Length: 192
Image (cartoon, rainbow, N blue to C red; front, side, top):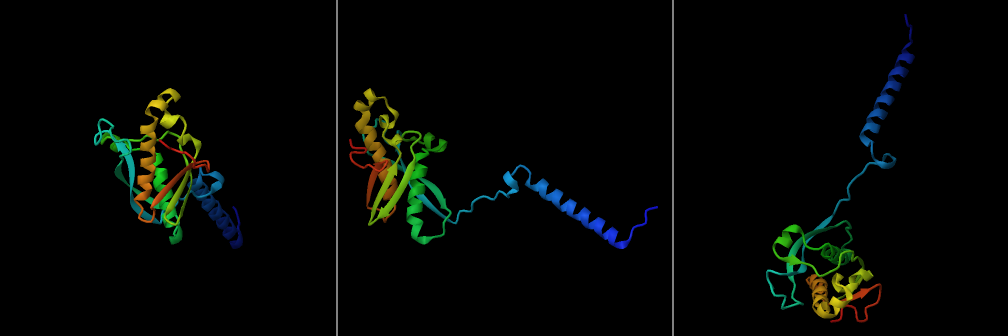
């Protein structure tokens, strides 16, 4: 017969309790790097904004290159700093524009003239002017066209790209003008 004293029994139950709690914690955290609990980022502020694309149902013959049409998106920002709200929403709107139309929007005739792989690097808003800087993918081959086709269709594509960006940003009432640059250079960027 095993003759255990009370403190030994208590110690045994304490050890079993620690083992059980540790086992449950390991089970719940399995697959997470370094045992960290993976929590999603909570968005704090939402706004419905309009994103502008070309539309082959509204302009089937593409007669108005610079004419773009709005579609709505709901954007959420994670900061609760009211001073940065305009800049954050402007950045999010341009970033969402670069994703292109959704499948439902494509079915309604929306399409983009902006190259795949374009990234917005910076948005600065000061005195009603939004300065938006992109990577060089924005101007490569004028919306992905080869050089020989760019010379022919370039002017129309450039107008459409410029319109998509400026109309999306000018829907914010605080923004009166948009300056587009590529890697910090705004000279002759997207000039028809």
